Structures are given as C-alpha cells and as structure tokens.
Amino acid sequence: MEIIGIGTEIVECVRIARMIEQHGELFLGTVFTPGEMRRCRQDKKTTERFAAQWAAKEAVLKALGIASVKKLAWTDLEIEDGVKGRAVVRLQGAVKDQAQKQEVREILVSMAHTRAYATAYAIAVKG
Image (cartoon, rainbow, N blue to C red; front, side):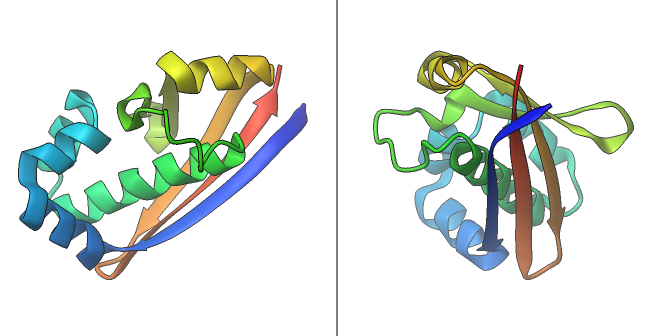
C-alpha cells in the first residue's frame, strides 16, 4: 500500500451553523449531496454532523492535493456511512478524474466532532 497523500481539517461547528443559517439550501445544495443532507438531518446533532462532513470533504481534497482547485464541485465528493461506522468516500466528475490521474485506489477517512469542533483525517492510497 502506497500513500499518495494525507489531509486533515478542523472546523468550528458554529461556522457551519452560520453558513446554514445565512445561506440555507443554497449552501447545503452546493456543498452536500442529497444523501449527505438526508443522513445529517437524521442525526440528533445535525450541525455537528454537517461540520464533520465538511471537514471530511476538505481532508479528502487535501489528501488528493487538489484543495485549491476552483473548478471542482463539492458534490463530486460524497462521504457515506459504511459498515461498522467506517466512512466510505465516493468520487465522481472532476474529483474522480484527479484521483484516477494519481492512480488512487482508495481514500480512507475518519471523522469526529464535539459540540464546538469537527475534525477529519484522510489518506489517499495508490492502487
């Protein structure tokens, strides 16, 4: 297993809450897939879950070395619930193209949150 890159992100949950409050569905629909929005809204700690999803997406983009590319769609990257609490990363569009150029086989991601902060860590593995 060869590691292509690692990424980490920490975000204040209140920052994400403000974005949701100020921009509502426009913000949510730009950043999160319908599946992510559904899963976050089902969680008792909705804001913290959205913040963790945000952090995970940022960490994945950093692991791929493409966090600063402006033509990427946030929704080309989806973090799903996997078996036994292990998150699964699904890519499509330009994000998937960038990952394929680097021969990324898998992206491992871990997320955590408190009331104040959400954090995520991602590792891109070559296949």
